[in-house]
Image (cartoon, rainbow, N blue to C red; front, side, top):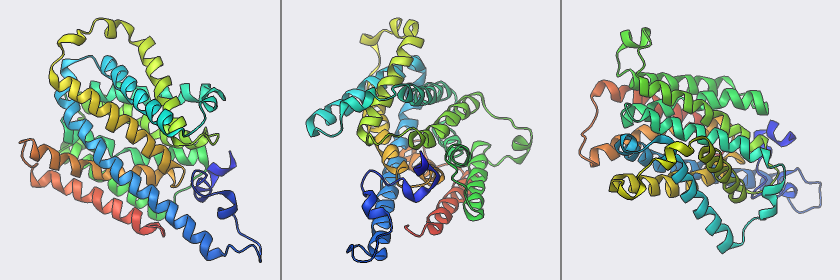
Length: 334
């Protein structure tokens, strides 16, 4: 797993080793071409995470409207079934990846699936009481946590500039979570929903570097399919009673809309995007795009008729955007 220790050596999914490694004179591949390949792959990783931030935002707005209408475990299993089915269909149609790769050390997918399942179950549990905006702000704490796990698991040591940006982004997130109330922040008056979801975000933060740590070159499609299948099976076993007691035939339409949205867009596609980007960018920068999520949530909630948040809350959103800008300026490929 030596490639995990160097952020630039994780581009195994689109740039071959012969392109990434320095070439000897006479091979026809210059250092400039190598740098250009690295830059191109990094830019693709950035584009994937930009889309990720927009798709994730929808899950907060929809999830908050469905969370109290169905058990968190039941909706998590449903989304995993939908997501795994979509990825399996893509794999069959495109003939991409090797299904046999999923049998190579399958415990890896159980570990990744557990982290992913824990995140989603705790997300829906938290959205029972947390607002979409405050939950999305909690989500923006994951880059700082991901940087810590990336350091521990992959040896990705962020420099001072990245740490400053991550801390600034975390400060902006806390500002939104506590709605600019410094006294509440000092007393750590965190709402129950936000506290539950914060624990879920810890699982999401460790999941990002684990993808790279446990990669055996399967490719993002097969890895995502293995993760979602394992996560669905684990959740099914753990929450069978809740699943069996759910009146699936009488669920409100908003629940089914949420299930299919989070299953297709906020699970299948976003899992692919994270897997794809993790092999091209350091963990801290992959999760840095979560800083855009509150902005998307604000826009979506306004479209849904909830209005705009107060100016005091927007201060925190602006801080997170500054943090994202700092991270992108730091990256020479951005």
